[in-house]
Length: 113
Length: 107
Image (cartoon, rainbow over all chains, first blue to last red; front, side, top):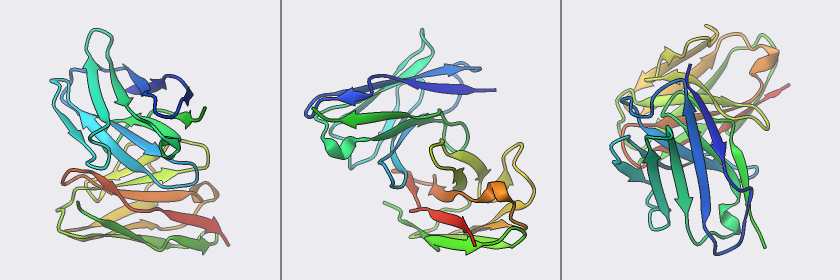
């Protein structure tokens, strides 16, 4: 059974960089699947951020593309999200997931000074 | 981007009722549509992939159908634990896009 777990700071300063990691257990990150990030602002719907394959191939949401970088660390069996120049609009619960099936529990990131 | 329009945005129903939620894609997506259930304060739970395939452990009262642009999620006999918000997502093209959600409330 694959398990995903997000980790990272819960508070980020405006104009700073949001960095989160998703630990993968129960499977190798080098298996043939994509690894994705989804976010949900408080009280709102789901927004797809992007996804990465273990080879490093990526797809990003055009609305965030200029600020987002996804990466994979095979040695640690985890993948990461970096979002730069954050504002209050980036306050959300961030989920890591595999497309259409497994989800992490989510982590709330608040952008505030 | 492919737009996914979900309806209704909310619905009230009673235990034992049959409920149908629809998703319409702005262009054909074959069967590349998934459905998720989300309860307050919890992560989404995957219910259905490829329009009609139930994930392991999902009760058989849930079913999905459709192809192309029109899709439905049906709950045949509502149970108390089914009251939640439901989302669809297309994964035929990038960027992946979600419907805006349907909140299923107790009548």
